[in-house]
Length: 152
Image (tube, rainbow, N blue to C red; front, side, top):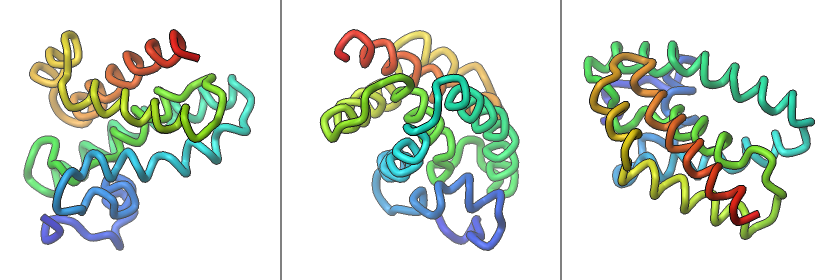
């Protein structure tokens, strides 16, 4: 898996979730784990600034994921986990920070990302390129966010 990527390449470094996506098993889970410190750093931001940062991350992710997939020659290579990072920070928008909220958000996001209920599954199957890589995880993030707001 790592032969297709170079962590010295800044685009691939980000796409691979700072290397977390190179985990031999469950790279999406490790990518989501890499998102936790990012969320904790972002949690001190005012809501509008947090939202802008997420929007920038998601927009940049279209290019980052698309370019990394193109470099690897595979659509949505499992090692590409920038989309999981963005999905998790979406999940945690306006959620009070605590160990249990982070744990619940992590679990909910992984459930929506892995099982892909409709319309997430539709996005995953019908959208391609960098946008397609990002969209299903953005949708999973919003689904998990909705449940988080019901809980918290």
